[in-house]
Length: 174
Ligand SMILES: Cc1cc2nc3c(=O)[nH]c(=O)nc-3n(C[C@H](O)[C@H](O)[C@H](O)COP(=O)(O)O)c2cc1C
Image 1 (cartoon, helix red, strand yellow):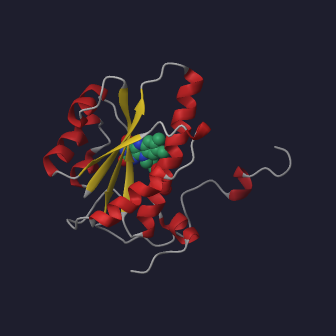
Image 2 (image 1 turned 30 degrees about the horizontal axis):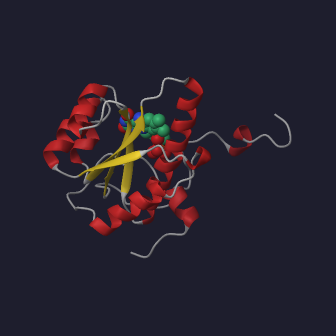
Image 3 (image 1 turned 90 degrees about the horizontal axis):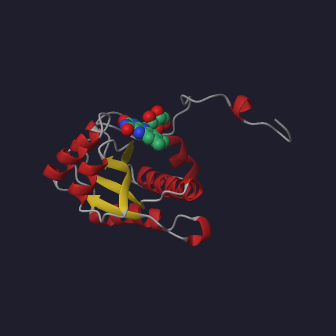
């Protein structure tokens, strides 16, 4: 499959929560991770770490960290997005903003390769930390499940479930 145009990848990305059994080639998984590594961050701090999980048993366990993380169990790979435990609210906001950009970069790189992706939040932080072997000063902020879509493949979505552009965008002033 030839790579998509950037704007096509942006329009094709959607949360994919059902996957085929097909594994993601290691070089494609690395490319997705590389997209995250290259993301911008405040002061170029790059406070994130990524833990890649592909072992089925671990994926199944990991899917129990949150009631809406069930799709992680069947994913070809899941990337745990890890942040330092930060108490200061401003710093925390910045870290999450940075991580959000890294997550989106990875999701678009995945879409470009025809790989579906889905977020999953983390409810049981202790379980996530134990399964991933995280140090005490780190937490798992989010999971990014990856796999080839079991249903319709990734194609640009003509009518996304989004607020209309003219309601979202304010020109010059609100
Ligand atoms: C911060 C964040 C947390 C999310 N958590 C979950 C989750 O725990 N489980 C899930 O299935 N989807 C989760 N999602 C996916 C959203 O529900 C999804 O992005 C949204 O409904 C828009 O759909 P789309 O991504 O298909 O365009 C999360 C998304 C974000 C940005």
